[in-house]
Image (cartoon, rainbow, N blue to C red; front, top):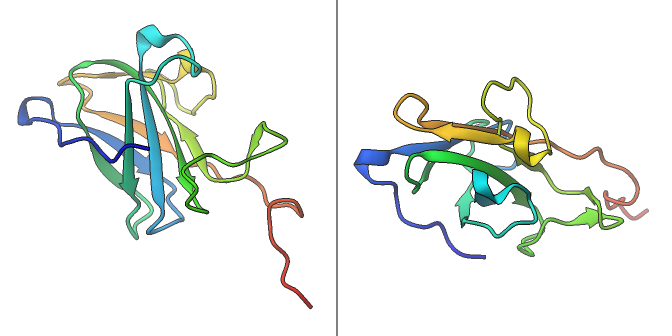
Length: 143
């Protein structure tokens, strides 16, 4: 993955607001897509990596011009730089999708995750979600 790319200029000081951070010090891998991408399988506009702080909420600079974007992210708990999944589908690490315009809860659907960045709306919100632990994802202590 690429390191975080520069800081947004003063003219376009946009941010990613992350909530429900329960993994201080872990790396947050972020993928940014333009609205024109139409799906999460489309090419990524920007890959960013941030270190999560010790607070439950954090803001990170987004070096983007005004526009409409969708964002997805995951917390890399085992430091392998990929989102680990159970059965190649269900995430086993914390993840999140941007809160789209006029939405009050996040969605995994790309079209519902598109948010506007402009002078009136300078931030994109992303709430981290935590997969439920089970025997396959939690290492049990040895007797």
